[in-house]
Length: 213
Length: 213
DNA sequence: GGGTATTGACTGAATGTTCAGTCTAGAAAG
DNA sequence: CTTTCTAGACTGAACATTCAGTCAATACCC
Image (cartoon, rainbow over all chains, first blue to last red; front, side, top):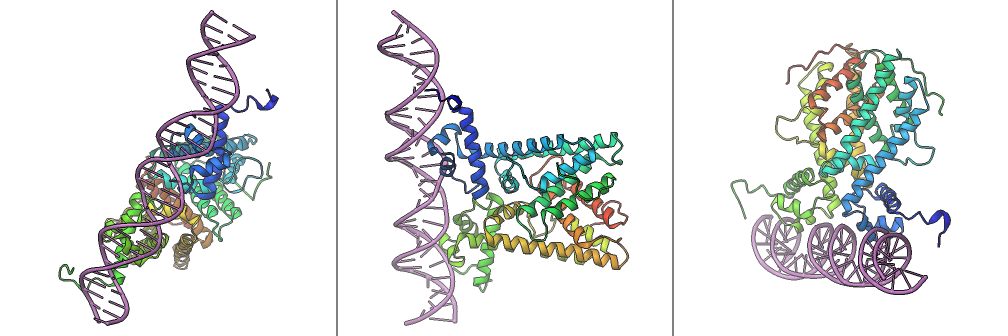
């Protein structure tokens, strides 16, 4: 029986995605190492065996889940920046997306995922490569943004690469504090400090948060 | 079995320390979640049962091990800075101790430990409190260093707290890249970038690494 | 059409291993 | 002889992965 909307629904791809999303949710909740296949299966409403059917091993499942999450986060960010034209505003948006949470839909709090991503990178080469590529892409996003801003005359002369490394490191470091709920660093303060560095180094005036979308 | 001359050696405290050191070594090697009591026992040359005898549970052992490692690191750093008088040199030493490895004895590469510390903080309150205290102490070290430098007229006027948060976040972020062996960020470069931020914000001249100790 | 192989999706019940923590009893020390 | 240490053997539970097979749909042939 064709149930109209539903019947093309159960393709393998969708199943996979469903499981990846379930995996992400569980990882956020229990942490990477404590995530059991059974948890993911339960959350996805299926059996452990099916999870293994789709992903040969647990590590493969979890690794792919991390990649999936990072991609989603990055994509959401890109979309977010796309709505803005000035380079200064764009980089502000970039900083904001690290700290000012997703009011919208998808991108859940990736903070905790990052901590796991880093810790697992040490020993799982697959995970390490996810992280590596992600970081590179991120730094490139920053540096090309800087270059664009310089061409447009909005930013002063700084080495874009150095700036990208510095800024991404700062954002990571601040993100850790946020993720771990350090009482002395609120998201707002992190945002503020991030923007102060940005505007200082790039040499443009910045006075408080611009109107949010 | 009394080995060697030093047979007064085997007090309970020394046993504990021996085990803590063993635990740290194993954590560095296998990661926190993968560290087994048996590993620690083997490395310490005793039995798993004895490990449990001294530390009621595995988590207690590992948590204490992290605390022990952080304390050792911090103490080594303090000692290192003590040999220097000018505030600028001191803060340089502080940055250096994050990136330029321990040529000396004890303080092993705590990088990997940090990643585990962060990841575990999310779910183990004990670990979280170790981290929290450690971070606070670290930021205070920075900010009082800044204040001292300002009093001495070496540094310009910045908000010491803001600076401490910013710098410690930057150092953490850079440390991650170093720890994970990111090819585009060598320890030297991290040090350089760190010092550029420091000298820029504190307003003093800095031209390359001072003579090492 | 009607049968029949083929394949992909899926499951429940094992299997086997890995470990944290316990138990018992022996050795050292005081 | 009593307390503190120490180790070997053991237990019980938790889990990843395997297995043997079911079910439904599609393709292939007459």
